[in-house]
Length: 332
Image (tube, rainbow, N blue to C red):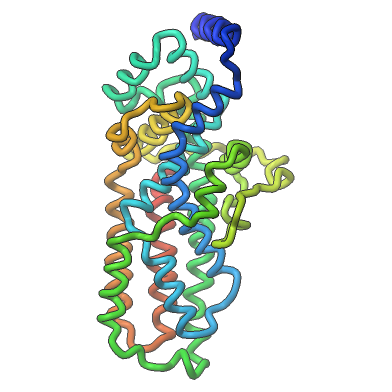
């Protein structure tokens, strides 16, 4: 591998002599990351809504309805793809992995590299730094899962505290219609917010994602609300962390392989993967199925609710805690 890296360095040097620059490579990589970044922004939008719900107690029936829609209205396909895309963006920051992907592509050519990625789902994670790159993504997932568990507890507690409020004891009326409306919203999905789309396309996003993948760091989303125009992560928070890295749970290796593959696409740059290859790497059956079941359970819970204060329990249990379990089932 060292010899390949040396040859890769020579190739890069020759390219620079003909006008190619590191900045050009970064631009190309960003183009390839557009589809991944757009997908990750859907997950970011969901997490920003979690921040908004955590920031203040529910104070009216309208607040409950808004929380139900914003947290429970996400499409399981889009949200699962958003999570795996976010994970891939973090994995793509690993310096050893980035070097391995670029060295092999430089030495053998992108077509050969893409053939390897297409023919063997395990190929990407077997490259130097592959396991470390995925581990960083799983560390971020652990932080996100803990955050969702905490948010769920906060929202479910209000199912009890609101029983003392007159407005919260009001009858819902047609809870079945509310559940049917939620089903329609879930089928369409909630698009990524424009500010977060811009934030994930920003030139400085890589520096933020590097810190989000540090083991033991808090969730990136704690400071990101629905009105966010940028994503920031305070460097001081991660400066002294030195904990055990996360490992892939037995039986979840295919998910880790997809994260590594999608991360490789991002590193390779402009038009490295076809739309079909990109879609395949983003689509993960188990997480999507888990999120779909969470949506169905949320609909059933809402349909069975009689009074307003009962709905926060449904939101906390199925639109927050269940989602945390779905993404949290990948690491150990």
